[in-house]
Figure 1 (cartoon, rainbow, N blue to C red):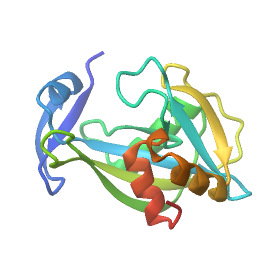
Figure 2: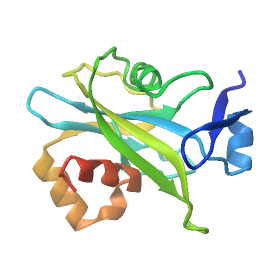
Figure 3: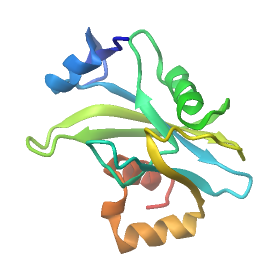
Length: 167
């Protein structure tokens, strides 16, 4: 099945609808919905990107994240990704903030990552094509891990965690 996404400008305005393949090939700005799942102990669920992935394999990432489909808004995509990647239904507690992917070559800001908070204790059934493992971490442990080796995290995750005062 062909997936369609919005190619957006530097202000997140839709320019055109393209396939995900075209967006990747043409290095288009796209929209990404991300979720951080907190449990009742205020721990954060992170997923370790699957070793099968070309990009960011083995790095800790959002609880769930993915492209916003054409015609979809960020919150709807965030809840869809929760279902697809963790097997849960949830409710968005709050909007956390925005992070932009930076092109490693041109250093230009690219895709928009809008992150949301969801509270859920599980159980979770994670997609093994997306993640090698999922784990709840205390805020203190995440802070310690980032200070020790920030490269074990996706850069966008660190930026979103910093909005929360964690990184």
